[in-house]
Image (cartoon, rainbow over all chains, first blue to last red; front, side, top):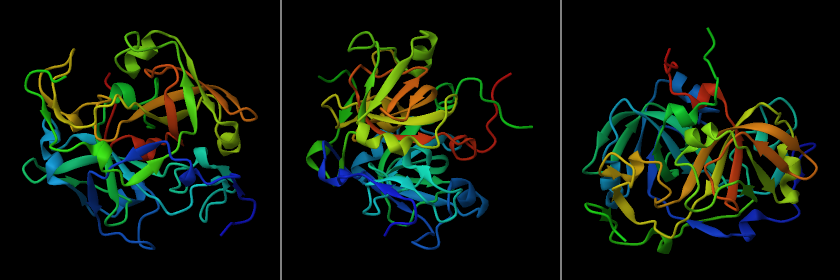
Length: 160
Length: 160
């Protein structure tokens, strides 16, 4: 289904696969299709936490992370549409290129959330996080430490 | 090759593929194996820019991005090792879990750089960026707008 003005690629990226991903675990959240907050900021405002349940085989890879630390959580949000170049978001500000949007509809539907660790069980591989906009059951691809010197653009300052 | 104390998974994530990626373009940089800066901060200190050359089919997806804006650049850094859980980085601070490191050696070798757009050609799909730690020819997976309200952890303030 295309909204007015939307432009698609002449091919489906899902049919030009050049590398493969494994799922290292899943997100457990209060959200499903239709109830999820529209972005991470809105998710945080609900004050509902969530958790990441890793495949227990990956639990040793958490060594060195700590409660209170921010992480970059990468998760797979494939909605079956990967070919849209220009989108007309339902609640957006008109037509916009896919690479100027955080929409899950993109050639490689990898979502990124900067979240704070609220609990950590290095035995079972379960990580509490302060918020997520992901649907319950969303596959997880990667966890990285958030590092201000590389994850904040040079010269950026908060308002106020 | 394993360094002292390193721990690997009992399986190779590259043999448990559950989703597929397409390459939307490549990074053109001054760097190769052995010459690349160790991270994005060090790359920025070299004052050498770089560029992203998209497959021209994706160029319309840049609409709405602007020079001076920060983007989240995702790129594929597969070194052939995806099974390390605990690593002993060459220049690091001892043993550390993979998810507490930004190392390219990880189950899904997706790297993330927050970079600033220095030029933009929406016809050819070529984007100048202020810095990268990626080797010349690195495949690109995604471009997203960097948005302070979702990409900075709550309450974070710069030093000084």
